[in-house]
Image 1: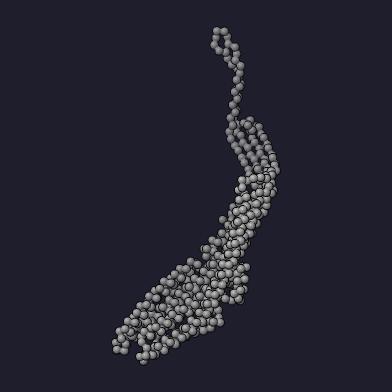
Image 2: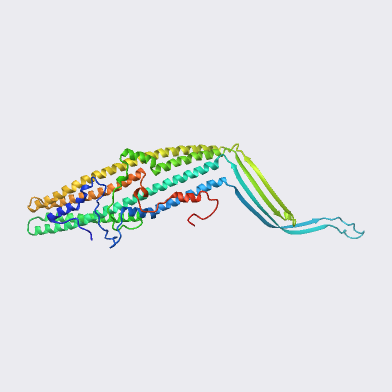
Length: 498
């Protein structure tokens, strides 16, 4: 059952005050006292309670967006052995087999005919032979020098791997932040739904009492209509809150992987943040994964310039070839063995301007990458300042809303007492009840905002991770796969056996 936050009469104000008494110390504590109840649609009797840490651990292990990004990093790792392969020789084996038919006809001389007879006879040579021809060969090519393109290609591949790891770290931050947001949205919307539900109970009782007073002539029909109108509006707000909760549950399932059950109140992570805004900005400009990824992109673009320039330098290769031919030229038993080793130097003289254009293009792309890195720093700085401000604002709003709730409780009790002696109308009571409800909804939202803003700020600083949160998970280490494949010379199977 959903626990009621409301009671009727004078006792209601005292009970409501006690319900929020635990929030009195929120100004000095990072504990967020969001009051939540079990979801009627998803709670299972005896089910294990879910905490923020357990939910984020589940997302860290099974979120599809995070897992596909990990696969992308592993795919990027393979570019390093591809680049390294340019240092190694290439070996090609060739084989040929065929059928050869050799036919020889040599015309002879004409023998003089007898007088009076026809043409004379001829003599000549005819030869025909069929053989199976074949050849086997091996060619080895080794690049000795190609303008340092091999070296720069390996360095570029390694830089791209480091950039991919930073992109993965950024995805991890996004998943954890989205998970925390989804968790707190379910808590907030559940609490608001509970408030809306119990507001209906209060207004139903208010309408009943108003009708009773109307029957004895203490109030007019207008008072009854006002009470009925407030009840109808409360029911409309309840269904809106229910729809919001269903949306939050769907988002929770998308990020975490399961539906929420028995969610426990969550804590802010302000203790993990730098002490001042300036410190947070300094840390973010150094550690944020998007800044680091942009810097690796600058390194990659710089190496691309060197790769393009290397095309204008000489290329030195050594070629070796061994071949064995069988039944050469159709002669049965005739074999021909050939072994060759050649050194080759290729010096580009003029490429039609194509390589020159590629060099200029790479230099412009380098400038673009440098400007993108600068842009990324400014965006990260703005993100830190924005989230830091939202966190401070949420804490201030909590203090104000706590005062508003306390004052609204006192006001509602006073209005009800005055209404009993005829000094207040039914509309005054309904307005006071609505004011208290709005203050409580605002307090719940502010408590949610504080937790969400703390996670967002930690992500903006670049320090939101499974390690910093102390999640009970097996950490994904991208260097493991990299070390497994970086020096592989051959093999089609991935390290996991596929």
